[in-house]
Image (cartoon, rainbow, N blue to C red; front, side):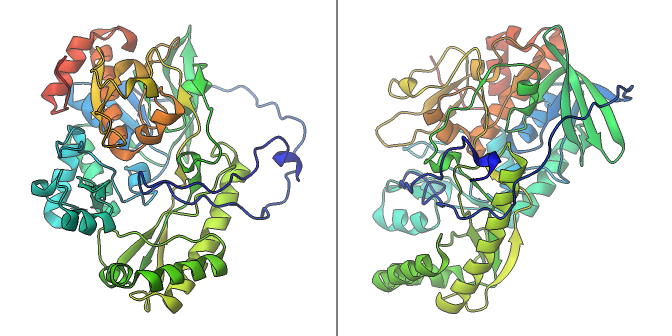
Length: 481
């Protein structure tokens, strides 16, 4: 075992569940491709003056699902908004991560409970095939035929049809960009937030790096939408990072696409020849080691693979992240070859694209003034500071109330958080990290940030009634108390 591996948890045992697509076999690992690093000592960076690039009301750091929703909501609330994004596009894991499957936005009756930004963006994608899933007339249906059909297409769960579409990632990139530009948001691509600017316990902006060098962005309120809590953690806010090592909710992966396939033929094969197809999957596991069946995408001729999902590796460690990429690209090659040689519908398959963005599920979670906890699920009571509602995991549970306190740090001012690092316990994180829930918390965070900036108050002092009223005006679903 190398020095950097000392003290790290061992690769976890395989676990599985039927709850959702992203929870299946976890890759058990192999010998590391990278040798140990040899760095020792320290280097003292000389002090320097940093030019201010721009000043604004609301700075959103991270253009993933939550950050995109936050920037749009803040701009529509009248704030001057800057979006800082390290890649060349918006959408995060839903675009650059190729997580083109959008989790459930309907409850078990078929009522859409994640609305607002989620509803608007998908409605704008639908007309030209950018979002494909069950029609509204079938949401909540328990018809076995419909459930079986949509279950193969990851739009039915526990025998209930849901609004859970596949999206075209390139169309979502363009739409997200244009929505923000229409709202007057200043986009800053190819830029990596390095350090928060903190004065007397209040975040005042960030220092970022780009090809233009090291610069500063100043803001009245900063929205941390990095997904990893990079800004609030480096600013000194409390956070949690306890996880279950064997749970795929905390695994890391690089998704990939195979083109030139016929997914309808593959699905029919799985449906009509189950014993033969099960034997084929068993053969795949024997030959490839880790093995994953394909998922549908937004097109019949493109297959989606979301693995290998690897545990025991940290998305905050550059060597671990590199290791994931090396293994994932090797498995893309082996899967393409195996399916082309053995699977009906894959005879002409080719490697189309590997995700340019790493599929990270968990690193840090904010320690907020409020928290989403497993103990709250059963009661189904709307919380006083509710800013959204999430579908529950099983038929036995009511929808889950999401509080504003989960976005606000306990001690740090000048900042709100959104996305997969909001304040919650590990169980609740399993669904709060999903894309629709990120849209939900992002819209609330952006709205709250604009209200704080416009009102000259800290985010923790935003009047919850004003926030809830603004969210309802934006089409967000909130429960009556």
